[in-house]
Image (cartoon, rainbow, N blue to C red; front, side, top):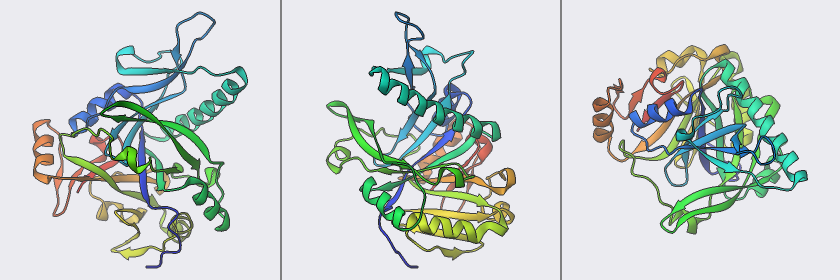
Length: 320
């Protein structure tokens, strides 16, 4: 295996797009994750009115350095239930607000389109130490991407929440039928060292893998594209192609091999889509005990516990 670049160092997060964020939180609590209420951007619909949620909202199961995201879009008719969300009221000058609203609307439209296909895993973000350097590397590799943006990521610490500026950019927006791809910076090491990470009942401690289903006749093309993103050539494993990224990996699964290589994963429309994610756990027995006590079916394999996609909101969950 040849590594041509270290601009991408691993996985940053994956995101499941769901229809009902409250039900998704309950489902992932049954799976053994601590998932706080979702946060939505909010604006007053008219001067003097109470702020209302709009666009897309999300919540994270945090592992420290990586996380699993649940995201949904606001139903313009029904809105969202107050007890299930936290509102982040946007206060910005009119010229900034207009641009920000346009960006949120574009993101919401893409998430809505994904949700029309199916509820499931539609977001994958890779980790980098330096977003600007990663963007420059991808420029040299001929990979199209959006501009680097700086977002405030809230991180819980023992001294309270801190907003850390995190650089990120979108990848190849019009050439990624599998979903929304991005590259995001690590939070500073000093902040991660004091981050308050919840003790998940299933003992989850990190996101370590994602499986992507691809049409058989496009496997080579996908391997070339992901090789350009990641700066690494894949190795063959059974009928799949695996990109090793230090402590994490991306696995391409030909559509014809999904049932054989990923028991519990459902086929995706057209053979293209994220099929599963892998989360590292400290204690396999404790993970199984939690699932049993909450009535969640699973398959106990030699090296992991697999919850089928039907019980994990559209993508199989592998606890390894």
